[in-house]
View 1: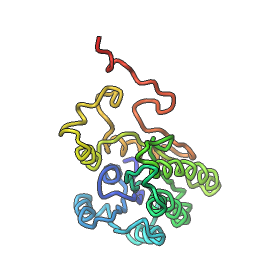
View 2: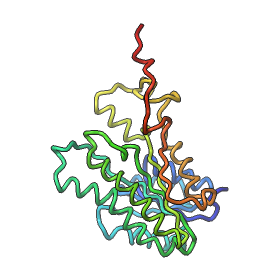
View 3: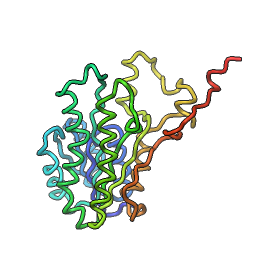
Length: 261
């Protein structure tokens, strides 16, 4: 088992990518603190994972929540080996609709909370020579017009990752990041249905969106994250890896799908 006896705190882990990581990490021998705002979903996952998991319900928009999360992990399992900053708000809004209150809430959850959680967890992580994995997005490189605030927060997360990797290296705490591409979570499926796409839309995407034949799944991301929270990736720190099935920068998609001759 690749994570035997490790204790890992995963934010935003009652559904989607976070829940997939919790399941994957437990299968590999870890004990996990799962976190979310929905107690019902959290309890359901907790029942599935059994004694290898504990649940903490909290809102990361509250600046006092990160110390509570760390305290819950230590109370449940007595140590902390890794923190995965996965939780994020991806609420849509263009520039015209992005007022101060909207922007501040996304920054609070997507950027301030990871910073404060790493700060609160630094002592326990230094004691175990632990790791931080930040879950970013390929939208950090530019983003989309209707996700301006979200994209900005993910760009900031890249700088946070590199800055803290440099600063925390002497304390043997590693900080890395996965910039995740388009992933078929339950939430993403529902969003696209609400946008007007028909049921089964993932199977009808053009080849440029899924060159391998499909878009990413939460399980794909979980398996990728496994490497970065395990000792297999030691001593690497400060890496921001684009977790996508095509080059994000400099990409020239195939135009075959537009060829009707």
